[in-house]
Length: 88
Image (cartoon, rainbow, N blue to C red; front, side, top):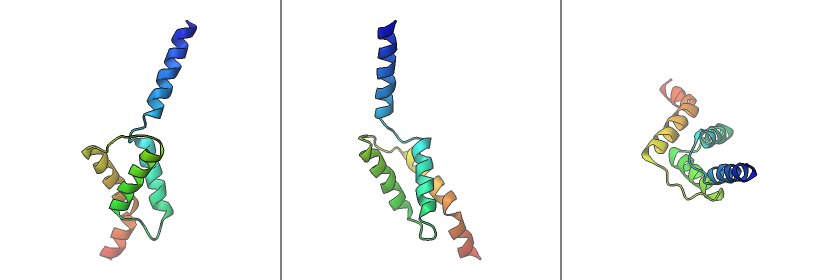
C-alpha cells in the first residue's frame, strides 16, 4: 500500500513538472498584461512572454493553434479599453 501511494505521488509530481499551457498560465498572462497598463505589450510580446514562462519552468511544450487563440482572446479582453478609446 505504501508503495502505491509513493508511486501516485511521483506520478503527480511528474505531471506537475511537465508544464503545459494552462488556465493558470493564461491567468498569469492576463495579470502581466494588466500590470503594464497603460503601455500594454503587443500580442507578439504576450506570446513570447508565455513561451518564456514555459521555458523557465523547464517545459519544452510547443504552443498549439488553440493555445495561440486563447492567448489572443485573453490579450484582446485585457486590452479592450485601448480599442474603446480608439473608437471614441
